[in-house]
Length: 451
Ligand SMILES: Cc1cc2nc3c(=O)[nH]c(=O)nc-3n(C[C@H](O)[C@H](O)[C@H](O)COP(=O)(O)O)c2cc1C
Image (tube, rainbow, N blue to C red):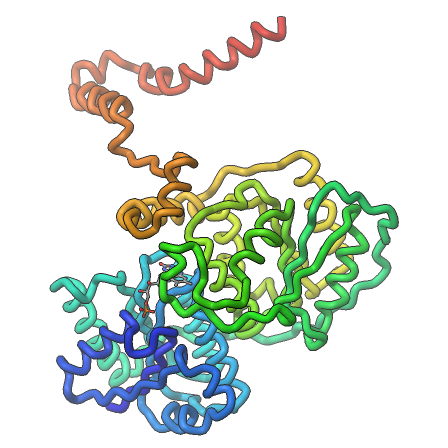
């Protein structure tokens, strides 16, 4: 069985994820693994894709091996997938799968992204393995890796794949027409538009101009196509200690001084391969130099997206979850699928409302769940991730349940009461009454204050 491994980690042979491949190589001699160092050699692959194409076309299984980076894959793997499509790599009918390592923070969206692109290229997809960074070092993790390979080979033999998408494409970008221009612009807020618009984005340029016209605030643009980013995040973790990126392109201080200080951010991109495209992803990954510090909590955020967004459920999750974990209010996502001008106007109005009323919403599962992963991770790594630790302590993010001793005690008491049949039968509706008692007290106070 010939397996071509696309190693999307920028760390090349030092990739933690790749160690699972090395392990599987040792336990199953029938599989022949050949690795393409996509993450580390992306610049040379951009110049010459011939060998990669040959390895992809002459194997039985394509296995994407990569770390989860900011809800998706590293920008280098996004670029590799772009190159596969640009170079018409014929992998139709082949089996594809994936292995990732991460801390399970939005590993699901990363997996969906690779699955969607594999299906786009006509491959048959077998669900992959999402392992924790340290899994391979314990028996359970090694067994799970072996079981994954066993299932992969079984699926290959028996042709058991995830169901492909069955969708008719009917998207035609709708132009911006007849949008009311707000002439006088307020200057007391710093509204930033971050885009990779490069003139090839179809409607995107027009959408950005229309949004700027419709908003009653002055806006400024950061175009990441022009920003001299030296490359994608290398995953070296040096910034975790020094807060400085190893690249000397000045992006870390640019991020802190020109981006994070804004009052609101609008992201504008054209959908590419079910994501924001590799250039935008490079910008996203490079934000890692700020660690896991949610420094823009309360900042309203919006999106201008050119493309068939309504069909991109995974991308929707990524956008919504990013806002949720960042503590940002998502003002809306204006697309050019239909009524482009109306959607842009709605986004401009909602942003204005959010800025003027300092609108906030509580976090949902996306945000609460995501932050709990970070909380535990940073606490464990506090010796190394010092800036994150300091920030989490200051912001009260370490809300460990074991600290809430009084709540635990109360629950023991409730548990004891509920397990006693006699008390239970005497209680009647007292339990429910007890639960709404604090609300009753609050309403009574409000009513009294009104009198
Ligand atoms: C830029 C960057 C972004 C990351 N984003 C995530 C993430 O969204 N979710 C997660 O669980 N881990 C995230 N991680 C952690 C990596 O997924 C994890 O360290 C992985 O095991 C590294 O694998 P590798 O050694 O194969 O590159 C991120 C790491 C870096 C450097």
